[in-house]
Length: 577
Image (tube, rainbow, N blue to C red; front, side):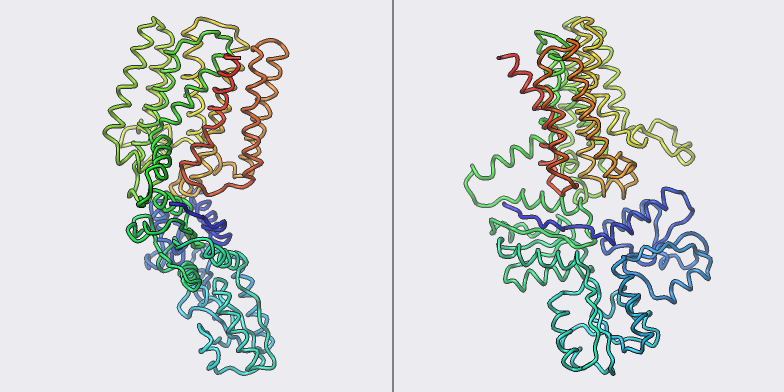
């Protein structure tokens, strides 16, 4: 199935700011942390926040200390005043657009205007807006209610920031017709406008629309309503589990968008589920996608990338005839260790897991059996060669790789020690992945072929480390929201996306400079000229994707491992030429 994804699907600015604030407070260890009402209208994200100890203050009436975060919708003034009087520290995460609306109401109410609010009467944002009108405000939800509203001039009309733009235009026309003195504030959020306009535009290109988000999310419901008003079927779902696969299988092209409170990982899971829906089409149409998806999610693609990296590193080391055994060892190591760690994740219900993790959960037994065979086979292959030093290093790499997800401290100590596993260490995944691949793809072949020129070893190690380190970061970008909510401290979370991308660029440029130095000083063979394409690939990725994009896990894996495969193919071409 072809799926067209809206550009603005997912968290809006206000929701992202609120999420970042509450997680930052939690990381600072500032005592109990609460939100006033659900932080966002998404059950899955709220459940993850609860797993981090973040509770809704309304569900904790006896709480008497701590920090309360005001969510993006804002709260009535009297609620904030009551919380302060009870001794809570208040962190205001009200969306800047909502804050602007509140200030407009305060200004016009002070000038004597009657305040007319277009929005949902029961919505949290509207409750906060009403409280700013001092003497009260009138709320209307439809053009009919606007026509019947009993207010006196002068009038200030303002909209809930997520209101349907067409509905607000109708209400504004009626109010202008009824009252000669009226101020109409354009308060609908630009992101909301853009999101709604995208749905209308996308509706002209697709046969049906899938809208992802909480069933109680007003802005998500409106996206579904707009799609239906455009004359196409709309499916409002919370998770991939809610998809009506039988109904959707009738369509060839489907649009996909998400509400402002929908985490990216949930939208990605729906995207994958849609692409996986089988339609009654010729085998040649869907078989390639199935094969590519299975290749990437099963780690076979990454294992092939390890083979390519090993071959390219061998050429950098000056090994003229790299024994096939070492290519096999790299393949077995990467497949086995990656599989064991992904099976060990298994947190949460399958529909909330990234597709590649869900794949490993569904096929855990055969994948684990193959991994064990690969572990044993790779060690036996080195033993048969008599490469004892290489074998010892590989055993150590397997031990560290398997221990990465294992709790290493006694159960009785876990409440007192924050880091109980290697994976709990900040940014550990990216560093351990790079070190593990460097050991399997460079150091094992180097030891197996006897000592070589040390400067060449240094260049090959840096080459492998940088490529695999960047590969891990690219994957982190796709999982950043989920990692943040689960409390995982990956490099993009610790440094921020902008600084992380700058680091990637600096590493690519540094690698290119090192390759040029090695070529100039004859530390590495001339194949280094071709391998300059790998750092160029990283820079091209940063240029083509200036901002993190929401893509399928299959595409993410294809791109992340692309630099490694490119290096192997170029090294092979050099050898053949």
